[in-house]
Image (cartoon, rainbow, N blue to C red; front, side, top):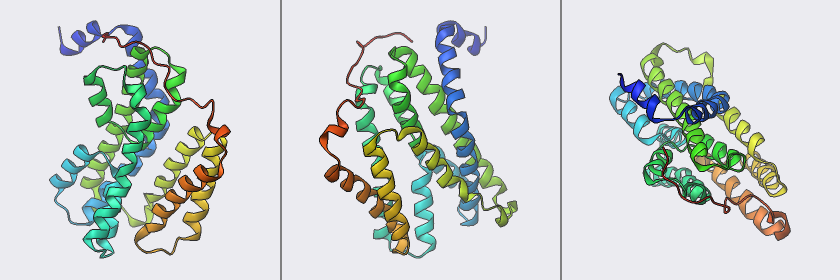
Length: 256
Protein backbone atom coordinates (compact mmCIF):
# COMPACT_ATOMS: atom_id res chain seq x y z
CA UNK A 1 0.00 0.00 0.00
CA UNK A 2 1.41 3.38 -1.01
CA UNK A 3 1.52 6.51 1.14
CA UNK A 4 -1.23 7.98 -1.06
CA UNK A 5 -3.44 4.95 -0.39
CA UNK A 6 -2.82 5.28 3.34
CA UNK A 7 -3.71 8.99 3.19
CA UNK A 8 -6.92 8.19 1.33
CA UNK A 9 -7.91 5.63 3.97
CA UNK A 10 -7.24 8.03 6.85
CA UNK A 11 -9.12 10.95 5.31
CA UNK A 12 -12.82 10.33 4.62
CA UNK A 13 -14.06 10.90 1.11
CA UNK A 14 -16.29 13.84 2.06
CA UNK A 15 -13.28 15.69 3.48
CA UNK A 16 -11.21 15.00 0.38
CA UNK A 17 -14.08 16.45 -1.61
CA UNK A 18 -13.97 19.57 0.55
CA UNK A 19 -10.25 19.89 -0.19
CA UNK A 20 -10.88 19.61 -3.93
CA UNK A 21 -13.80 22.02 -3.79
CA UNK A 22 -11.67 24.59 -1.98
CA UNK A 23 -9.01 24.25 -4.67
CA UNK A 24 -11.63 24.70 -7.40
CA UNK A 25 -12.96 27.87 -5.77
CA UNK A 26 -9.44 29.30 -5.50
CA UNK A 27 -8.35 28.30 -9.02
CA UNK A 28 -9.14 31.63 -10.77
CA UNK A 29 -7.02 33.58 -8.29
CA UNK A 30 -4.35 30.86 -8.34
CA UNK A 31 -3.83 31.33 -12.07
CA UNK A 32 -3.18 35.00 -11.39
CA UNK A 33 -0.84 34.01 -8.57
CA UNK A 34 1.17 31.81 -10.94
CA UNK A 35 1.54 34.66 -13.44
CA UNK A 36 2.53 37.03 -10.63
CA UNK A 37 5.08 34.44 -9.49
CA UNK A 38 6.46 34.24 -13.03
CA UNK A 39 6.94 38.01 -13.07
CA UNK A 40 8.48 37.92 -9.60
CA UNK A 41 10.91 35.18 -10.58
CA UNK A 42 11.96 37.08 -13.71
CA UNK A 43 12.55 40.16 -11.56
CA UNK A 44 14.69 38.18 -9.11
CA UNK A 45 16.77 36.89 -12.02
CA UNK A 46 17.14 40.42 -13.40
CA UNK A 47 18.69 41.58 -10.13
CA UNK A 48 21.44 38.97 -10.48
CA UNK A 49 20.40 37.44 -7.18
CA UNK A 50 21.63 33.87 -6.66
CA UNK A 51 18.92 31.51 -7.87
CA UNK A 52 19.07 29.45 -4.69
CA UNK A 53 18.57 32.56 -2.53
CA UNK A 54 15.56 33.65 -4.56
CA UNK A 55 14.06 30.17 -4.43
CA UNK A 56 14.58 29.72 -0.69
CA UNK A 57 13.24 33.20 0.06
CA UNK A 58 10.15 32.56 -2.03
CA UNK A 59 9.31 29.28 -0.31
CA UNK A 60 10.08 30.45 3.22
CA UNK A 61 8.51 33.92 3.06
CA UNK A 62 5.52 33.27 0.79
CA UNK A 63 5.17 37.08 0.61
CA UNK A 64 5.46 38.37 -2.94
CA UNK A 65 4.34 41.93 -2.16
CA UNK A 66 7.12 42.40 0.40
CA UNK A 67 9.73 40.95 -1.97
CA UNK A 68 8.50 43.18 -4.77
CA UNK A 69 8.62 46.28 -2.57
CA UNK A 70 12.11 45.43 -1.32
CA UNK A 71 13.58 44.91 -4.78
CA UNK A 72 11.85 47.94 -6.25
CA UNK A 73 13.06 50.26 -3.50
CA UNK A 74 16.57 48.81 -3.62
CA UNK A 75 16.65 49.41 -7.38
CA UNK A 76 15.64 53.06 -6.83
CA UNK A 77 18.43 53.54 -4.32
CA UNK A 78 16.14 54.10 -1.35
CA UNK A 79 17.81 54.24 2.09
CA UNK A 80 17.73 50.98 4.03
CA UNK A 81 15.63 52.63 6.73
CA UNK A 82 12.93 53.33 4.14
CA UNK A 83 13.20 49.81 2.72
CA UNK A 84 12.88 48.12 6.12
CA UNK A 85 10.03 50.41 7.20
CA UNK A 86 8.13 49.85 3.95
CA UNK A 87 8.50 46.08 4.10
CA UNK A 88 7.41 46.11 7.75
CA UNK A 89 4.30 48.12 6.87
CA UNK A 90 3.51 45.88 3.91
CA UNK A 91 3.81 42.77 6.06
CA UNK A 92 1.91 44.28 8.98
CA UNK A 93 -1.32 43.51 7.16
CA UNK A 94 -0.84 39.86 8.11
CA UNK A 95 -1.27 40.83 11.75
CA UNK A 96 -4.67 42.21 10.79
CA UNK A 97 -5.50 39.07 8.81
CA UNK A 98 -4.49 36.92 11.78
CA UNK A 99 -6.59 38.94 14.20
CA UNK A 100 -9.55 38.76 11.84
CA UNK A 101 -9.26 34.98 11.47
CA UNK A 102 -8.30 34.18 15.08
CA UNK A 103 -11.81 33.22 16.14
CA UNK A 104 -12.27 31.16 12.97
CA UNK A 105 -9.03 29.26 13.57
CA UNK A 106 -9.68 28.86 17.30
CA UNK A 107 -11.68 25.66 16.82
CA UNK A 108 -8.94 24.05 14.70
CA UNK A 109 -6.24 21.82 16.24
CA UNK A 110 -2.86 23.52 16.66
CA UNK A 111 -1.23 21.67 13.75
CA UNK A 112 -3.96 22.98 11.47
CA UNK A 113 -3.58 26.55 12.73
CA UNK A 114 0.17 26.41 12.06
CA UNK A 115 -0.25 24.95 8.57
CA UNK A 116 -2.94 27.41 7.51
CA UNK A 117 -1.00 30.34 8.99
CA UNK A 118 2.06 29.39 6.92
CA UNK A 119 -0.10 29.27 3.78
CA UNK A 120 -1.84 32.56 4.57
CA UNK A 121 -1.77 35.12 1.76
CA UNK A 122 -3.92 38.11 0.88
CA UNK A 123 -6.01 35.90 -1.37
CA UNK A 124 -6.30 33.10 1.19
CA UNK A 125 -7.36 35.53 3.93
CA UNK A 126 -10.13 36.99 1.76
CA UNK A 127 -11.10 33.49 0.62
CA UNK A 128 -11.39 32.17 4.17
CA UNK A 129 -13.34 35.16 5.47
CA UNK A 130 -15.76 34.86 2.56
CA UNK A 131 -16.45 31.14 2.97
CA UNK A 132 -16.46 30.89 6.79
CA UNK A 133 -20.20 31.61 7.19
CA UNK A 134 -20.99 29.31 4.27
CA UNK A 135 -19.35 26.21 5.80
CA UNK A 136 -20.58 25.81 9.41
CA UNK A 137 -18.83 22.50 10.12
CA UNK A 138 -15.25 23.26 11.30
CA UNK A 139 -13.82 19.96 10.03
CA UNK A 140 -15.15 20.47 6.50
CA UNK A 141 -14.15 24.12 6.69
CA UNK A 142 -10.50 23.52 7.47
CA UNK A 143 -10.13 20.99 4.66
CA UNK A 144 -11.83 23.45 2.31
CA UNK A 145 -9.40 26.18 3.44
CA UNK A 146 -6.42 23.86 3.04
CA UNK A 147 -7.38 23.05 -0.53
CA UNK A 148 -7.70 26.70 -1.53
CA UNK A 149 -4.69 28.07 0.35
CA UNK A 150 -2.31 25.29 -0.69
CA UNK A 151 -3.29 25.57 -4.35
CA UNK A 152 -2.68 29.32 -4.43
CA UNK A 153 0.62 29.15 -2.53
CA UNK A 154 1.80 26.18 -4.59
CA UNK A 155 1.05 27.80 -7.95
CA UNK A 156 2.56 31.14 -6.89
CA UNK A 157 5.76 29.46 -5.66
CA UNK A 158 5.96 27.26 -8.76
CA UNK A 159 5.51 30.32 -10.98
CA UNK A 160 8.30 32.13 -9.15
CA UNK A 161 10.69 29.21 -9.49
CA UNK A 162 9.94 28.95 -13.22
CA UNK A 163 10.41 32.71 -13.55
CA UNK A 164 13.83 32.51 -11.86
CA UNK A 165 14.93 29.86 -14.35
CA UNK A 166 13.40 31.50 -17.43
CA UNK A 167 13.92 35.13 -16.40
CA UNK A 168 16.81 35.83 -18.77
CA UNK A 169 14.78 34.69 -21.79
CA UNK A 170 11.43 36.34 -20.98
CA UNK A 171 10.83 39.36 -23.23
CA UNK A 172 10.39 42.65 -21.37
CA UNK A 173 7.54 43.50 -23.75
CA UNK A 174 5.29 41.00 -21.93
CA UNK A 175 4.72 43.49 -19.08
CA UNK A 176 3.25 40.74 -16.91
CA UNK A 177 3.26 43.07 -13.91
CA UNK A 178 -0.29 44.10 -14.82
CA UNK A 179 -1.54 40.94 -13.12
CA UNK A 180 -0.83 42.39 -9.66
CA UNK A 181 -3.57 45.06 -9.63
CA UNK A 182 -5.93 42.63 -11.34
CA UNK A 183 -5.50 40.08 -8.55
CA UNK A 184 -6.20 42.61 -5.83
CA UNK A 185 -9.16 43.96 -7.80
CA UNK A 186 -10.57 40.42 -7.89
CA UNK A 187 -10.22 40.22 -4.10
CA UNK A 188 -11.96 43.56 -3.60
CA UNK A 189 -14.87 42.70 -5.89
CA UNK A 190 -15.39 39.39 -4.09
CA UNK A 191 -15.12 40.56 -0.52
CA UNK A 192 -16.30 44.18 -0.34
CA UNK A 193 -20.04 43.85 0.13
CA UNK A 194 -20.97 46.44 2.79
CA UNK A 195 -20.97 50.22 2.98
CA UNK A 196 -17.85 50.60 5.19
CA UNK A 197 -15.89 48.36 2.84
CA UNK A 198 -17.01 50.28 -0.23
CA UNK A 199 -16.16 53.59 1.44
CA UNK A 200 -12.68 52.37 2.44
CA UNK A 201 -11.99 51.08 -1.10
CA UNK A 202 -13.16 54.32 -2.76
CA UNK A 203 -11.22 56.60 -0.39
CA UNK A 204 -8.04 54.51 -0.62
CA UNK A 205 -8.21 54.39 -4.43
CA UNK A 206 -8.77 58.15 -4.68
CA UNK A 207 -5.86 58.95 -2.35
CA UNK A 208 -3.54 56.49 -4.11
CA UNK A 209 -4.21 58.07 -7.50
CA UNK A 210 -4.04 61.65 -6.22
CA UNK A 211 -0.77 61.07 -4.36
CA UNK A 212 0.87 58.92 -7.05
CA UNK A 213 3.88 61.28 -7.20
CA UNK A 214 4.95 60.56 -3.62
CA UNK A 215 8.45 59.06 -3.43
CA UNK A 216 9.20 55.36 -3.14
CA UNK A 217 5.59 54.29 -3.60
CA UNK A 218 4.61 55.69 -0.21
CA UNK A 219 1.27 56.77 -1.69
CA UNK A 220 0.06 53.21 -1.17
CA UNK A 221 0.76 53.38 2.55
CA UNK A 222 -0.91 56.79 2.85
CA UNK A 223 -3.92 55.58 0.85
CA UNK A 224 -4.33 52.54 3.08
CA UNK A 225 -4.26 54.61 6.25
CA UNK A 226 -6.65 57.15 4.74
CA UNK A 227 -9.17 54.47 3.82
CA UNK A 228 -9.11 53.01 7.32
CA UNK A 229 -9.23 56.32 9.19
CA UNK A 230 -11.88 58.02 7.08
CA UNK A 231 -14.15 54.99 7.23
CA UNK A 232 -13.88 54.60 10.99
CA UNK A 233 -14.36 58.32 11.62
CA UNK A 234 -17.20 58.96 9.18
CA UNK A 235 -19.18 55.73 9.07
CA UNK A 236 -21.86 55.50 11.78
CA UNK A 237 -21.54 52.63 14.23
CA UNK A 238 -24.84 51.19 12.99
CA UNK A 239 -23.15 50.28 9.69
CA UNK A 240 -21.04 47.70 11.48
CA UNK A 241 -23.83 46.06 13.44
CA UNK A 242 -24.88 42.68 12.19
CA UNK A 243 -21.69 42.10 10.19
CA UNK A 244 -20.24 38.56 10.36
CA UNK A 245 -17.64 38.41 13.12
CA UNK A 246 -16.91 34.72 13.32
CA UNK A 247 -17.90 34.65 17.00
CA UNK A 248 -20.48 31.88 16.64
CA UNK A 249 -18.06 29.04 17.06
CA UNK A 250 -18.58 25.33 17.08
CA UNK A 251 -17.07 23.19 19.85
CA UNK A 252 -13.50 22.10 19.36
CA UNK A 253 -13.15 18.66 17.86
CA UNK A 254 -10.36 16.21 17.08
CA UNK A 255 -11.40 14.60 13.78
CA UNK A 256 -8.94 14.51 10.84
